[in-house]
Image 1 (cartoon, helix red, strand yellow):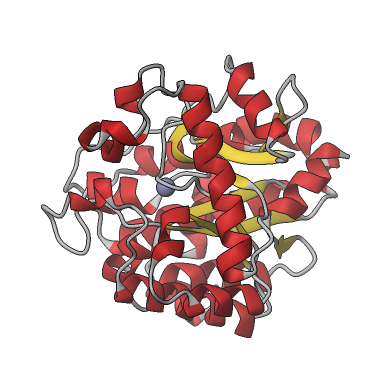
Image 2 (tube, rainbow, N blue to C red):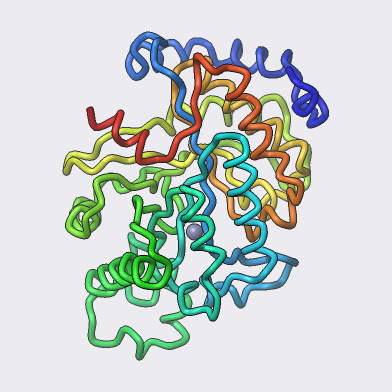
Length: 336
Ligand SMILES: [Zn+2]
């Protein structure tokens, strides 16, 4: 265990204890999904480019209506994260809300693109792709329903996704790389072949939309060993799979930044411990870990990029067993 991870409060012993605690569940995953452990673990670091409610301070909820109106601190943090990853030979997979492309300056996004980091589609307005009623699609359209009046939910979703792909290309020169659903769903898109087919029709072969259930413990409380163990357990529910339509799903791996910090008021050390244990699980089992965070949250909660650096360090310590990749590379392996 290197100096950095020790300073973050994640000890080798803690990681081993977590691995032992989840061993029986792990073995079946190894046999099924990872060629008896011969495959390299694939670790992804993903940043969703949007504003998050209650950041940079509690009570800020206007972002619900302006998800793409990124503030300067969020954009700076995103570029800095990209540079840190590049310096370490790693890649970050970004997912961008299309409305940010209406801002005066998009040079920051071009910079990320030019560094070689993949950028995917996160819809134009952060729309809810499982919506059954027009008012559930997005806050913006609840306030301004005339923007979508007369159109079906399917038409609104299709246009919201299509325009993001077009805008990223026209304004920032970005070739869209994959799709992430706004919000994560415990069952992903299971039972929604209509949404799967919509995304396939829009040219996506893989998406990231599932976020499995797990324990967190009560808010403002240090997580117990049981909570940490349950987050590690949930990693096997966060492994990639193929929907019956042929669309590949690469779930988000718990715990997300907004779940830990915004919903549960975690301290950074708790978060680092949970992420460290989970990444170690993936490394030990030839699995996938898809780290999900938002620069609008992390610029406040982890301004020194400790989490991203820790993930890079864990992979670097295991060069024969793990690699940091974009989600497209994970999807390619799943589809084979
Ligand atoms: Zn989002």
